[in-house]
Image 1 (cartoon, rainbow, N blue to C red):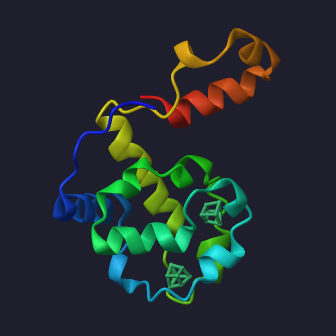
Image 2 (image 1 turned 135 degrees about the horizontal axis):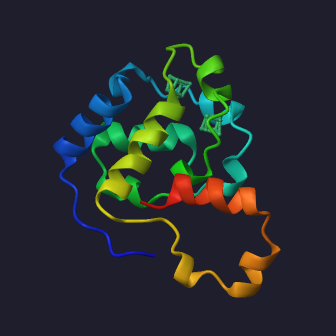
Length: 132
Ligand code: SF4
Ligand code: SF4
């Protein structure tokens, strides 16, 4: 995994709100988003934990894999009583990483055998999402 650059707490909160258009403190931690998300088994933090970390200004949230696993399916937004769009928050977090040249995957690190097995469209879509 690429080396992390330190992210200031306040700046991270501001940037995420600015880029997503969402209000972090609208969330009151009911957990409905995590209950609705079909991909939590693959995430190291639940969607509700991602937003809580952002509220607290925890810079380690930028290292989470949740934003890369998120498929922007909007199941969380549909269930959220506060209308928080977590897909937009996840996208903002991805963009923050990519703009710091912190890719999630590097082609150089993928074994050739693994690349050969992947459908081309999966590779292209994944690279668009996960690499700067
Ligand atoms: S469903 Fe909405 S209010 Fe509840 S924890 Fe998730 S983001 Fe927060
Ligand atoms: S948009 Fe992302 S976080 Fe929300 S339910 Fe879908 S996969 Fe989970």
